[in-house]
Image (cartoon, rainbow, N blue to C red; front, side, top):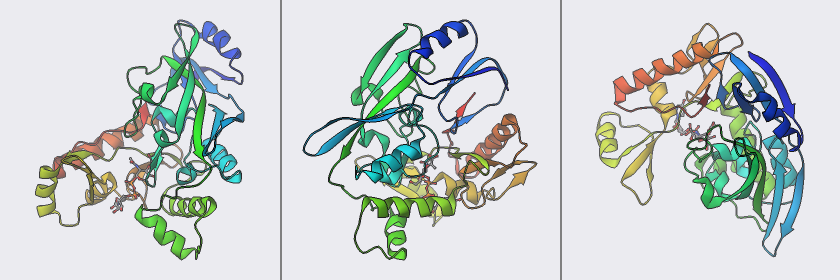
Length: 318
Ligand code: EPU
C-alpha cells in the first residue's frame, strides 16, 4: 500500500509532482511488472504514463523511433511489427513499459534491448533537468544498466529512441524458435512469424501477469567459471549451461538448478514456483511481498547448499 498514488501523463507535470513529493518517500513505476513490494510506502508512488510513438528520423537502412516511457512495451512492439520495423520481434510479449525496458536491458530469445537502443531522455530529480543518454552512457549488461545501479532512484526516464532495421535480420538461433517455426509450418521467415513463434513459446512456459501475479524470471542465470562447471557436470550430467564466448565462464540455467532442488510447482499459501518454469515465482492472489521474498531466500539457500551456486535476484525489491 502507498500513502499517495499519482500518474503523470506529460513531461511538464513531472517537476510539479516531484516538487510536491520533495522530502517524502518516492517510487517511480513503469508498469510495475518487475518490482516486488515488501513494505508499505509512506510517500508517493507515481506511475509514468508518458505516451506517444513517433518516427523521428530515417536513413537508408534504419528508422529512428521515439516512444514515451509510459507506453506498454507489447503495444510498442506491435506498432513496430505492423510497420515492418525490425529488431524487437524477439522481445514480443515481455510485460512492462517502454521506460522500464532500458532499466534492466530486457532480453529474450537471443536479443537484448541494447541492440536496438539508440538514446533516451531522463529527468534528473535533484537537478531538475533532462539529460540525454546514448548507448555508452547506459552501461548495459545482462539485465543491468546505470539506472538499476549507480543512478538508482535519481532519474525518471521520459522517452526512449530505438534504431530499427528496414531490412530484417532474423534471429532464430535460439533453439526453441526454429522448432516452433517448423511446428507452425512457416515457409518464409518474416518479422510477424518470428514474433508469433516467440509469443507461442512464452505462452507455453510463462504465466500471464494479468492472470496470475509474477515478475517473469525472479533470479538471473548465474555465471560460474568453466572449471566450476566441469566439476558440477561430472556430478550432474544433464546440468544446463551455456559457455560465454570469449571468456572462461559458463552461464547456468537457474531454472534447472531450482527444479533439481524440488521447487518446481511448489506452493505455500498463495506463494509458489511456477509449474512450467521454475525461475518464475508466482502469487496466486493473497501472498504478501514478504512471503514471496522469504520463498526466494529459501530457494537461494537450497540451490547454494546443493550446487554451491549463488542466485542473484533479477527483480527489483522495494
Ligand atoms: N529449465 C529447466 N527447468 C525449468 C526451467 C528451465 O530445466 O523449470 C532449463 C531448460 O533446460 C531450458 C533452460 O533451462 O532449456 C533455459 O530455460 P528457458 O529457455 O525457459 O530460459 P531461461 O534461461 O529460464 C531466460 C530469461 C527469460 C527469457 C528466456 C528466453 C533470464 C533470467 N531469463 O530464461 O527472461 O524469456 O531466457 O530467452 O535470463 C525475464 O528476464 O524475466 C525473462 C522471462
